Length: 360
Image (tube, one colour):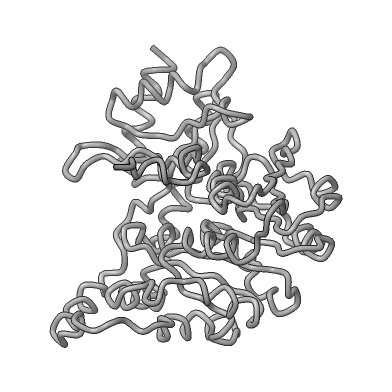
């Protein structure tokens, strides 16, 4: 009898999947500042939405194929048409659908480096011999716009604000880059809500048919455990990408919970303000401990310890104290630790431990 493993594609065997941040088990006593989750709970109105769904007994039925209520509400907020929005199973599904719809054998994907580490994984996952071309950041950690504008490829992708740096690039420079790139441009806006107002490129899809914007409910809406996101773009392009999604990719509960959180604007702004306030305080306190930190427009900060202090050692020591932060061991990231913004209490615990490490 043949070994079925011998039938698996060689590309699958050699494929290196995305490695997410550590996820402790439920009930473990850990301060989790490593995967950019929101430290505050989602909208309290969600509980009633769940009760309504359960009381109507509709979980026995399939969900709306288009996530129509949520899709329409998103479109209305930005003055877009519903068919310019595709609701997805987290923004990761949105990114995967885009890569699969767009890329052909031997195509090139261009990206600043570092940026979201899922992009090179997706480039390899399509298994078409795609080239992933990295354009290093400048010494100040900003995009090298002049080099990016010279590149040619099928897809240019970047996080806006960028990850893991948290830096927000100038909107006009990004629009100039989009106009000059002869391919599709993905602006991945997982963290845009934590930036100053009116920095999203989402309304610019009306003026730039090669622009795709992705968003998620995982970060600013405190729904990382739910898996809901969306992409926005030119109608015909979105319709073609839509053909590749699962028939019912977002469940009834997911659609309703996300819609409830989306429309609870007062609570959303309250929690957003808390994160931004703590980001400012934590940045200032870490600066006193000798860390160099670029200005962040996200819900995390990218921290470089003073010379002679190993960021990897900080990561490991904090982990021993049940505080999780993120350490990337390659490229310029190896000189930094990335710290998600926690509650005031969590941030105080972090600062206490860091002081014991750096000021023994």
